[in-house]
Structure formats: C-alpha cells, structure tokens
Image 1 (tube, helix red, strand yellow):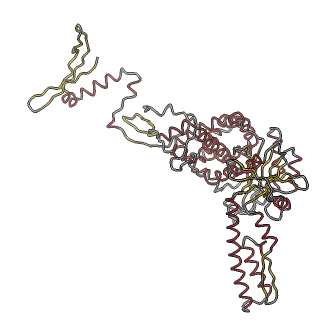
Image 2 (tube, rainbow, N blue to C red; image 1 turned 90 degrees about the vertical axis):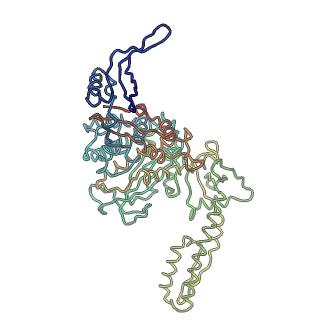
Image 3 (cartoon, rainbow, N blue to C red; image 1 turned 180 degrees about the horizontal axis):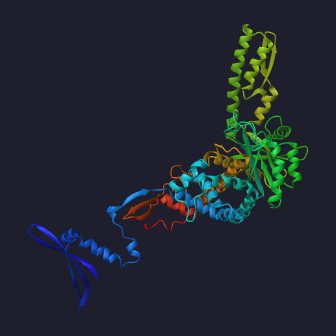
Length: 570
C-alpha cells in the first residue's frame, strides 16, 4: 500500500492528484487498485488537510516518527570537535587510566575526579589551555565521552593535588599494564633531565620550597624553576618522573632515582643509560651498588677516560658499522679494565671540524684587534687588557685552544698545540663506557642503547612544545607536581598513539618517507565535527564525513566510531 501521484493536464496547467492505492495481481499482471482518492495536491496544501493527514499518520509510527524532521525548519546550533578527544579517550581506556582514576576518586570521595583528570590530559593532547579555560573547552569546544560529567573549576584544581599524591601508585599501575600492552623490556632504561621555569612570585615559600634559581635549559635565568627527571624504556615510553628543586645539580639526582627504580620496578638487572652531564665517580659507584649496569657518555674535555680511549684508536683499529645509525664504533679496554666504545661518523666529523675552524677564526680576529689596540698604546693597563682578553676568550667557545701572555703594555697570544692536537683527535667522535661485557651487549647494541636517549629528549620536546607544559602559574608545589604528572601521562598516551601509527605504517602526506606524528594525527582528527541542529524543537546530530587519512588514524588507534555514521534525532 502506498500513496500514488497522478498528473493530469488541463489546458496549459498540470494538476497532481494523490490516491491511496495497493498493488493486486490480475492473472499474470499486476495492477493498482484505488482505495481512497485524497484530492488535488495544491488544494490539500492550501486547506491544511495534507499536513493533518501526515500528522495523523505519524502518531501511529514508532521509531520512524522520531526520525522525521521538516528540513525547512532546520537550524544549526553548534559544531564541536569530536575526533581528537575520541582518540584520546580510546587510548586512555586502553591504558586503564579511566578505571584507575575513577576508583581513586571513589576512595577519596572526590566527585568527578576521574572526569577531571581525563579532561586535563585530553586537553593537553588536543588543545592545551589553562585550568580556568578548561571547563569552557570541555563543555563547548569538543564532544566528551559518553558518561563524562563536567567538573567545576575548583574540582580541576583539587584533582591536581590528588594526582600528585597518587604519582607512585599511578606509575606502578601504568608500568604493569604497559608490560602487557606493549611487551616493554626494561633491560635498558634511559634517564635524562630538563628544567622548566615558573611564572609568578620569584621567591621560594613554605608551600613551594623547590622553586629555585638554577641553570635554565629554557634560557630563562630571570625566572625560578624546577628540574624534571624522566625515566623511559629503551623505546621511549615514560615509566617514571621525578621533580627536583630548581638549583639541583644534574649528577646529584641519579642515586635517588636509581634507588626508586630498583625498589618499585622489580624487573631483573637493569642497564641505566645516561648522558655526560650525569657522570661522576660517585654515580658510577652508585649504579654498581644498586645492582645495575650502565652505559654512560664521558665528558668530551678534561676527562681522562675519554682521552685514554681516543688515544687507543690508530690505523690498525677495527671499526664496526652500526646499522641504521650512520656511524661506526670501536672497542677499547682501558688500563683499569673499563670497557670503552669510541663512536665516530663522517657527518659529525665534518660538523665539528667546520665549527671549530669558524670559532677559531672569529676568536683570532678579535684577539688580533686587541693586540693592535695594545701595540698602538690605546690600552696599556694589564688589568684592563686581561678583562678585554677574557671577554673574548669567554665568548669564543674554544678557550682551551689559546694561551695568552699579558703584561704592562703587552699582549700576545698563541695556539695551545696540545689542545689543538686533542681537538683533531676528538673531531667527529665521542666515547661511551659500559659495565656490560661483549657477551652481554655487542658494540652495536651499546651504541644503539645510548642513541635511544634521543627518545627521552623527544619526550621533553613533546612535554614542552606539543603538550604545552609551560606556562606554569600554580603557586603551590603540590599543584605543580600534579600538573607535571598529568602532562607525563598525556605523553604516555602520545607515545602509544605514535606506536599505533608506526605499526599501521601511516605516512605523513606532506613529508615523503616520514611516519605521521601523533600531533599531526590529532590535528587531523580534531577536524571531525559533531554538527548539532534543531528542527521542530527536535535535536538532530550528525558527524561530518571522514577523510581517508582520518579513517586510517581512527582504525590504527582503535577509536570507536559506530555512532558517527548515522544522523541521530532526539
């Protein structure tokens, strides 16, 4: 049974008539039998009978009645982003952090604690903003997961305090889950440090004793800071972080970090990989006392171990190419039995040689100018000559290569031949020491482990640039520690997304041969919008069509999209 339209022409006009008909079989043929003639369309519309007929029929519909809207009455209300947060929620759930924080909130009677932590982490991944702006972003700019309830601004701040208290437990929970999720291997653990400056008052207080002035890696010596230590697995997944006072010396952090690592993450014998700023004789001993092995980079200058290792290299040295790293390495056993690895590359040698030549030429030009001033009698006081020379040498970058002779009305300089010879020996090279025997780790494996420190540096860049760790305006140490923890958990999610994209072999469409980054992927997903309309007081929701790249990203990250493919009414 259906409504049939019949058209009839009278003069120069065409009229349409509606009839309710049904199909019946007449022998081998099918014909239409008229059950009711409804009338001419124009007359039905003018009289309102057509609308009344449709309305009367709709009352008897069940699901279909809710899916009918008058297109002419549609109006757009909003179009929040849905893709980026949906991806973040999918990874958050895979990490088990939704259940972990929900349970922690219930234990502490902290309303909407789990919702607050997820919102803060998702915001870092998608569109970082201040905690004051966060509520507006979560409720207006994006579509949060089903069941999420909006916390108040006070609840966001309170959540940071609780996150800081839960740091150790959260890291242990994450580590256990990551062992199953990614099959991580803790044979090599990479450790490095960074600093981040703080806004607001510059003086430490009882509520923020770690706020101190120190060496700023952000080039902000005018601001107090804190120091952040990050422990990552060999493939770059953060497993623990530590916050130190802003004036903490790098090398002094390692013993306490090692003690915490071996106590909380029982994973057999661990090899700690660290860079030259963390090296001291005490630290090497501390690593051994903690029952750990080590791969450490030596200092390049004023280091006996580095010089001894470099001097063992000669024309008869056997070099091993390190696959995938465009460098080669040779092993040396030092007088005290230390196993050292000398690493060199042609690209590094060209860079070092060119840089040294440029610095020497620039410094020599300045020293010649100073020498001429003294010779001409424009500068005679030895103290002033010395200060001028020290300014030049101090800014040169190669002070060790020059020796100065300063006297009354006298200034000369000459090259330090021993320093120049060592610089030529060092060009293109660096030295690693390790407690691992050749049977435990080959030359190539040791070099590869050290180069994995680049993954820790990448996580620091992620924290500062992508996740916008700064600016930090919280004025209590507890809240700053909570903020840093949230950013680190977001960095873990970013690492998982990156692994998913690499596993799926999704390449950046604008950069040949490069995998799509998590940042680019989340920007792509954030372009997916949930369009919200109203028609006849009925809400209508539909999701914009995904591009092929967005579809690939969603599949790679296992983001559910089953509710996106059909418009929803009501």
